[in-house]
Image (cartoon, rainbow, N blue to C red; front, side, top):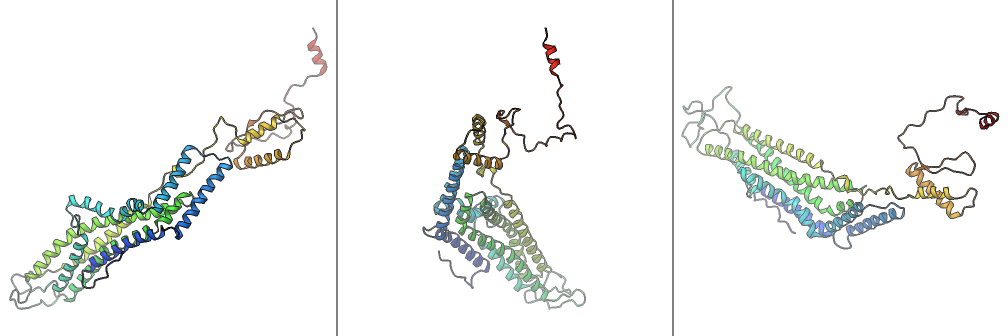
Length: 417
């Protein structure tokens, strides 16, 4: 896609905005298609990430972490989304490209048309450029010089249009004639910085992010890199919301500036002076420039609040309560094994693996020794981690008997008839 060269003889605002918009579309579309070409850097990175994702999934299954139905379906959905958006231009263009670049203009038209905002039905760039031309015309005409000696002062300006002899009041009322040119110049600076600067920056940001979209979409596969995909989506959504808010706010500015400039130019053409017009236009342009900055900050804050739900994370479901885990089966096997029996090397390795899993997962079962050697009691659940430890025994009570003592003679006496 080749963009037209910058035309020096055309309108400044229209030329700049059309050129930046064309470059944003070319960068976004052409960059994506170049990265999605088979054999490109993106295709190699995407193949490696998909292989790693499937390998990690398989290793979890080998180590006994069986996922639930929801987790398995979610993994397949992630793979499908990544493959569809990172390799298919048709899907990417409909779901992301058109929404980011063309959606704001359509929404601005739907919002501004009922309110009658200028440019809502199209031609916003042309209307912005027309206001810039009006400011230039007003700069050439100036505010005019008030003739204090004329009965119609301060509305008539001296010159051939009215036939009044030029007479500038001396003293305090006299103003330097170059102040109007300076005021109109600052008004044009603020106007161009707000209108052309905001729209051009938003379009350039959206074009660059759309070109790099496949890289960030591939980061959706893993929970550790999902924040990069969320950040990319937030900035892209903020650029789209900023373009929408900027278009609406520029329509409001046009609704105020167009009739005001037309009225001032008609007065100057008729030969009337317009004192204070430069300051008024400068203040209006500055206020709307600050309002555009506030609009961009507000849309950025709204986009920053976007988060994926926690359900998007792959959480492995715990084992069912009725099924035996590896640790319980190991403890149960040890209970059935006779005391002092020789154990094979495989059983020792299995015991070591189970002990490692027990240390990682926390205490699950505890086997308490009975009073006689070689006998063991049934496994009982260990105390929860959040329960406080039992209080220590008082000094001298650890070996003290708590049951009543009974001698042999007392027992024989009790058994006598």
